[in-house]
Length: 211
Ligand code: T5A
Image (cartoon, rainbow, N blue to C red):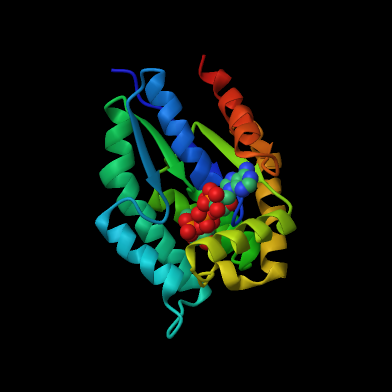
């Protein structure tokens, strides 16, 4: 049986990933593929519990190393129990975030050493790498406006990581671009400041590599 493909979407807060991953799932299914949509952190019961801790724990917030290890624990569980079995059975997997978020947020954002992250991440995901990563890049002011509008529309507040401050968010945007520069064969950078339709057109085009 032909192995499924593993596609990830990445980018800073409010870049529009969640909007685009849903479209990707629908489009691939219309093209006759079996598709599993997942997200990080999350996608299993344990990983969803870890997600809540990571996003919302403010009374005893994880220190940078604990934060890293929690993201990796969630990833290990998701890869072993969900992503690998799906890919092995021919299902295409589309994930809202994966390893590049760790390098951008915990590496470039928090300042943890990238070489340590590389080894720890490889251990957590047993060497699994995406076949294609779509990086949605938006200027910080566009992202901030979208997040503000969403918070107003849904009457919610920014979570612990979203509230990390402007300097943190600039570092992680630059970090994502650096990751793409280092791995141009896998990571496609898309200007995500346009309409959802414009962004989707560019995202869909990037799948041409799969024939
Ligand atoms: N994290 C994650 C780490 O620090 N390390 C890691 O290893 C991993 C895996 C996850 C958090 O964890 C961090 C990163 C995150 O801080 P999350 O809630 O999943 O938390 O956060 P995000 O992944 O950032 O998801 P969001 O839902 O907040 O943002 P999205 O997915 O980028 O954006 P989306 O699609 O929900 O859109 C945001 C708003 O903009 C609108 C949407 O309708 C929505 O209201 N929108 C657009 N508006 C105009 N034009 C467009 N093109 C638009 N696209 C969407």
